[in-house]
Image 1 (cartoon, chains in turn yellow, red):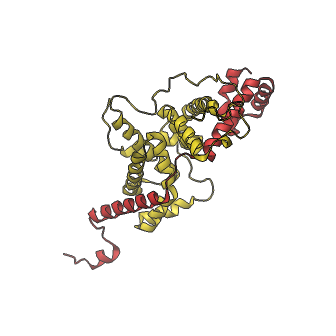
Image 2: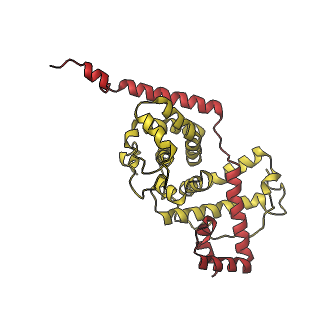
Image 3: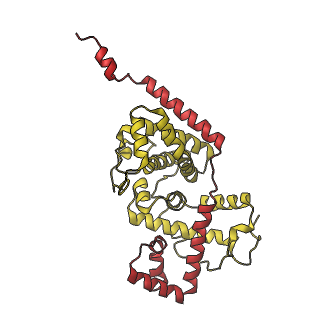
Length: 223
Length: 96
């Protein structure tokens, strides 16, 4: 397995399927980026404030480790600051940051799991969850049967069981609300590959959550 | 349209990116297949529950600490760089 390397400069280039930052009006981030490039530290701090939570959540979903996610959040913004001159506005600034975050998170996973290759391609050949098996109906608002803490634990446990490649696509697409094209750009994947992984991720999560949320199972799977 | 065909279109169906002709077929299949109807309903709930109940949050105090650390690193990095000549300093530089 190749040893983890520092983030490649080409990842910071906005190559690949370019996503127009905005069809009509320029995205407000572009003005902040321009000010930050000119040395306005308050503008860069504003960009951090806007995206620190998204970057932290993305890193935490991928690494499943809070300490790693904090370190990665710092590294992502520091790298962005160092390479700000490379950002030309061909993609959204947030997508550019997410791309750095995904790369840093996967490198962190590789360092932790030295015996295993961790990449966006890992475990994608699995057939698990590709075909629905559970056809039980759920209660109308199934999450209401659990306290906030219980529900958070169920959601964490369930998503942690997904392979990293699926988990990352689901996180970006369904939790962070990136479009399919932005997710593809951030992960360096094709649009069909994102769609395929998203389907598998959603179906696998659905099967796993069904244990808790199906009709007639009120509270029985709480422990 | 059978269940396998339907599953292949599920992502586009959720995204509302499906041709009108195909959408009619999808809806027809959903009316006749209870299993696929359940899959659509529970998959939609899966997405909604994750969107509405983010299990990982960044507490304000941790966010503030991280932001301070990032800004300190950026400032230190700026100090390490050779100062780029500004218009004013370039103008005041003695010419040889």
